Image 1 (cartoon, rainbow, N blue to C red):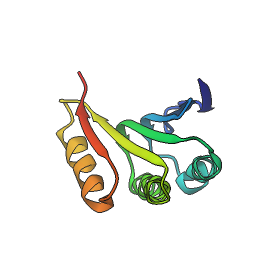
Image 2 (cartoon, rainbow, N blue to C red):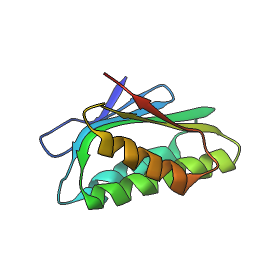
Image 3 (cartoon, one colour):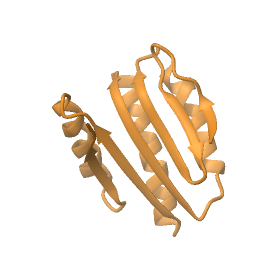
Image 4 (cartoon, rainbow, N blue to C red):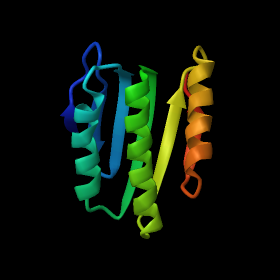
Length: 120
């Protein structure tokens, strides 16, 4: 497993383990676009047969939300190009708004496997 970005009070832990990119924690930094640009570049450059993005966020702000959507669109683009790609959205039963957010993303994206999983 490679740690791409260490978790901090305001930024998520991002790891790459084979073909699984995981994002977890909180994301409410002021420079979300710059922060996620690095992740988008990694996903663009990654040359794997399949790619799964697993997201388990506790909280994120509006600018982070937009960055996550861009990341998901990039994953969808890979799927449309013939690469096996999927998204797993994990949420806590204590956070029904995160379940709703995952459903919103899934509805916006269409055309890519997008699983919403309660974890507790």
